Image (cartoon, rainbow, N blue to C red; front, side):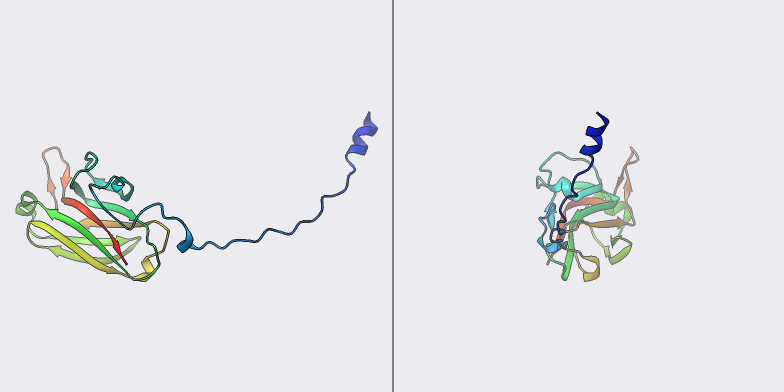
Length: 168
């Protein structure tokens, strides 16, 4: 019996096979999981809002945003892009806070800042350095408002988010 095991262990080595061709990661060729922009009433809005809004039902025209909002997007190409944010500064907030300054960040890089003076709808749009954009990989954008209204239940209300994203 021991001889069977000994003979069974002696066999030819497998033939050498070359490694298969190695593929290079090409972000521009990958399918996108996220889009470049959204509106809060879109069914896919939840994919773009990481944190910083009060929950609303599907199809809501806007959402209350906290002073710190984080959104994510994917770009089609690594080239010059403009980030935009559509907001409404509510009368109740503006009467309490006055002008509100917004800071826009990608990673640890602040790429824009602006001050909104006046209640009502505002379209904010800024160029983004190409060095901060990478095609096909998710890009996290943080929006920080310097002033907000604190409701009686301690919820911080900065503005109404309507939509946002990138243009290329």
